[in-house]
Amino acid sequence: MEKDQYLTLLARARKQLPKEVFEKSRFVIPKITSFVEGNKTYITNWKDVTKRIRRDEHFIKLMAREFATSISEEGGRLIFQGKFTGSSINKQLSTYVKMYVICPECNKPDTKLVKDDRLLILVCEACGARHSVK
Image 1: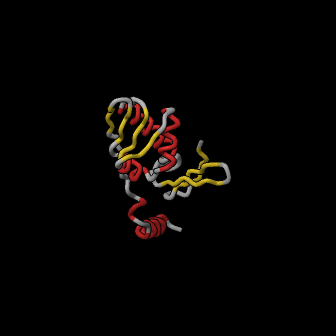
Image 2: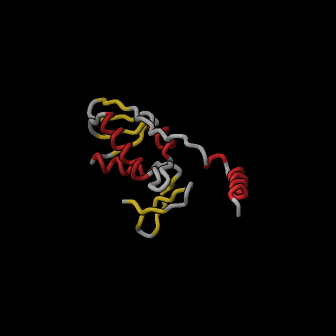
Image 3: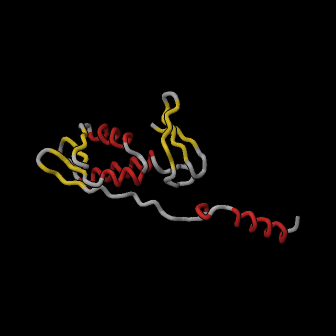
C-alpha cells in the first residue's frame, strides 16, 4: 500500500468518526458554594455539582466519611454537622473527582461507577476502560 493511498484511507476513516472523539474540551471541577451557620455547614449548590460529576449517593456517603460527620438534606441544601471551610470541602471534591470521576486512561469525565460483587469499578464510557476503585 502506498503512502498516498494510506493517507486517503485514513482521512476517510477520520471523517466517519463522531466529532466528540476529537473534542479537547476541558472538564472543570465545579466549585461548591457553602456557608457556616452556628454549628452546621450548608452547601447550597450540591445538586448542580452532583449532576455535573454524575454522582449522587456515592459522593454524599464519601463526603460524610471523609469529614467524619453526618449529612442531611433539607430544602435543597446539604447540611454537614460541624464547621467546615469551603476550601476544605472543595479540596475533598477535587480529590473525589480525580479518584472516582476522571478516567485514568483517557482523562475524560465520561464514567460511571458499577458494583461488581464487592468491588466498585470505574467504567469509562469514552474509551471502555475498567478500573477498580476504593
